[in-house]
Amino acid sequence: MKFLLLLSALGLCWAQYAPNTKPGRTSIVHLFEWRWADIAQECERYLGPKGFGGVQISPPNENVIINNPSRPWWERYQPISYKLCTRSGNEDEFRDMVTRCNNVGVHIYVDAVINHMCGNGVSPGTSSTCGSFFNPGSRDFPSVPFSAWDFNDGKCRTSSGDIENYNDAYQVRDCRLVGLLDLALEKDYVRSKVAEYMNHLIDIGVAGFRIDASKHMWPGDMKAILDKLQPLNTTWFPEGSKPFIYQEVIDLGGEPIKSSDYFDNGRVTEFKYGAKLGTVLRKWHGEKMAYLRNWGEGWGFMPSDRALVFVDNHDNQRGHGAGGSSILTFWDPRLYKMGVAFMLAHPYGFTRVMSSFRWPRYFVNGKDINDWVGPPNTNGVIKEVTINPDTTCGNDWVCEHRWRQIRNMVMFRNVVDGELFTNWWDNGSNQVAFGRGNKGFIIFNNDDWPLSSYLQTGLPAGTYCDVISGDKIGDKCTGIKIYVSADGKAHFSISNNAEDPFIAIHAESKL
Ligand SMILES: *[C@@H]1O[C@H](CO)[C@@H](O)[C@H](O)[C@H]1NC(C)=O
Ligand SMILES: *[C@@H]1O[C@H](CO)[C@@H](O)[C@H](O)[C@H]1NC(C)=O
Image 1: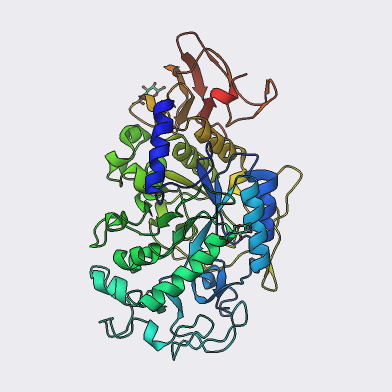
Image 2 (image 1 turned 30 degrees about the vertical axis):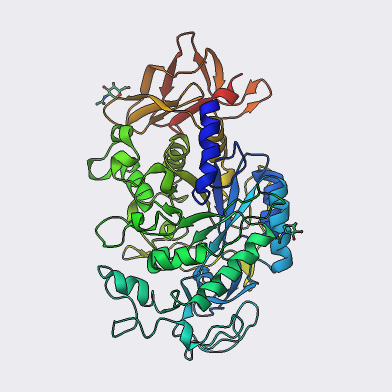
């Protein structure tokens, strides 16, 4: 234990890799497109009490309003200014959210869109979430201000001005990503404007940043911006804390730009993780869970202490970004719960849970033609996240983070934090189990026949409540009970037809 404390204290020296979550809180949740007012309430009524470490929020800065199609979710990835003014709320609401979440031990991580401004082809005007004027044609964003000098038009070498070939690292960094006006981040003026925006958020009390489209920026330009950032607000963070940085780099292999190019700046999103885990759980290409024995670096992933991991994100859950059709989402709830539980039980990486909204998915020739649809709304105004009597969410908010199986695995990860990966078992097929020291044990049956095995759990003797089929409430268990004998062994039986064909027990689910 002392050794582990020492390790986490040393971790502060490289604070941009450290997530800045409170001790004992080990995961964050992406509340995609939620309003600030709803996030503030969710921190207080749910995330704080249930052990979540933080929330990744949608971009808080002013964006273009797109009316054709009508208010797509991706309009928030087209900045107009750095005013804190979006469909999620204004600056006062933003400050209120950050304060209230921090006060219950849940930190805020901002999705920072700093590679570009809005699309080249958008009409000039004031159709923006704060009403700021802009003119993409003349590269004029007076509310920042940015002008024609501040973009990469002179630098890009493709005839269209857009990225045409991902095998050319210069194009990927210097040209426009799908027409989005590419900021000249080698200019000190542009770096300073971006840093000013991020420092404003740091002052308010955020704990870190997801840096959108990092692959499309030179790592050295990013570093120059990060070097301008102030330490975190000492109302909530130790003096000298640096913001947590995780960079969106889609590296599935086979391109010149590598995740490792960005390690000097902070952590990087490991997109291979969800793509491979989906392939294994779907049993595609001969994959089986038994092969997960050396999951992590053994699968060619980046080092664990550089990885930000997730089963799905807001892009690839609707076919955008990377990973393709193997990605597991709430639309396949049975496999999805297994995937998220595997991620949260396994020691690899820093974990992010996805929380989505439902949209009218409609496939034409294998493509979802409604992949653009924005959050639940009334005439463009984002709907409140209502809470049903059974604790699920209404108004088409999916709230995967409130599903018992996922919420309880977030707690499992907190309980087993720092414990070694132990007691692996598999049947050579899709029945696998592993422990985390003497603190937790999980077992899966993804085969087409029942599982019945007597296994070493590593846990002290006692009766444990399975946190997948139920909850420990007081000294009662509403789910399956597991009896661990004095030698640490327990009998498990899991039908292949079970609603959730997996069982998880941990030190705090002991009766
Ligand atoms: C830190 O947050 C507190 C509380 O909101 C605020 O009063 C203070 O001004 C902030 N510090 C800085 C440096 O902005
Ligand atoms: C898998 O598990 C079942 C029951 O646990 C066992 O009977 C079977 O032989 C195992 N191995 C394979 C390759 O299916």
